[in-house]
Image 1 (spheres, rainbow, N blue to C red):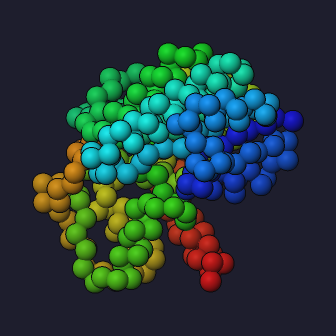
Image 2 (cartoon, rainbow, N blue to C red; image 1 turned 45 degrees about the vertical axis):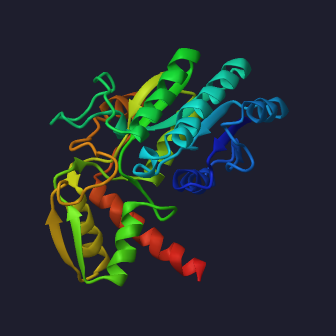
Length: 291
């Protein structure tokens, strides 16, 4: 039986992996949060791996506060770069296959066609820069790894755009959302399924992959769809990035080309609107269970 370690398991992707993993009995999962396994503490990481024979490590641990990263450079670097370096080094020593989650923010967003894995990286802010440093650490240390860049991740868990919109929709009757940044919303459950397929099929097509759902949209159109599907009446106003300044610069275009992972794993990739419906249904059930 394979043993799979999931770091950052209390985050939205970690929780989605837990849900998806219930359907497999051939894998033993070890789920850890930052208090149980601090990836920034090298001694703790090496000690943890010494106690367990781990076949795969799925690294969901990350500093993801994009705007706060601009003022918390050291903290973001520690988790997104140094912590990943620690994992890469122990994975090399223990012959563990590392599956690491990265981001569309490694690109500058100046293209107008979907980004391929081979396109030049050029992050605009601290978050993207530290995530790229993590990628480079893995490439420098390991031969057997999967780096999966994803975009606009959301689910019924954690903090994400879908949940923020639903909360604001209850509290406000007017809302302004940016309409000139293009990307693809990705349901975290889908990404979890892709990660499990890599493990279940013993894939040895190592390297960097892009994964998102299908289609291209803007944050404004994403919000529109959330409110429409949820039957929430709201006065939604379209604004430009310049009208809604943030501490960190966002890529104007961050659509990822997922054809490589689709072909290598023989997977079907769903259109983002279809999966948003599923996510909203699951969130409704999740909320009822929490009461």
